[in-house]
Length: 137
Image (tube, rainbow, N blue to C red; front, side, top):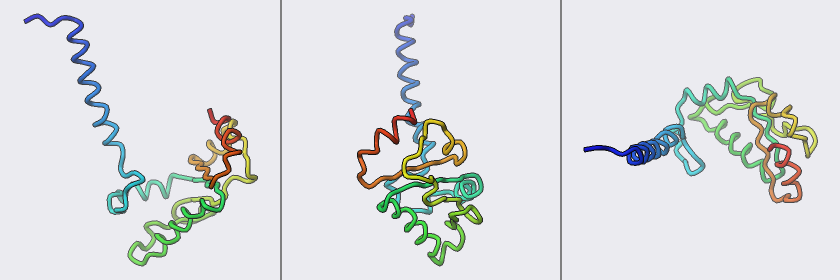
C-alpha cells in the first residue's frame, strides 16, 4: 500500500497535536483549582524558597495572598515549609509592596530582571490597566 505525501503529513500533524496536551499537562503541577497542598512536591517548594525573589505589588484586596501565606506559615503541622520573608531573610522571598511607587515603568525590565517574578494585583483600578500592561509588551 502506497502512502501519499499528503497522508503522511496529515498523520504526522495528528500525532504531533496529540503530544501537545500530554506535554503541557505534564508541566502543570497544580493550578488555581487545587486545594490539596500535598500535590506540590517538597522539592519544588524548596527550590522556590531558595531561587525565587518575588516583588509583589497590590492594592488592598491583593493582601489576601499575604494573609494566606501567613496562615500557612503559622499552621502548626507545616513548621517552616511555607515560611516566607518580606526582606528575604528566611523562606520564600516575597517582597510585599515590592515595587516602590504605585505605577512603575515595567517596559525597562528593571523589576522583572531584578526580581524574577513580579505579580501586580489590582482590585478594580481599570484606569491603570493600559499604563501597567502596555509597556510589558
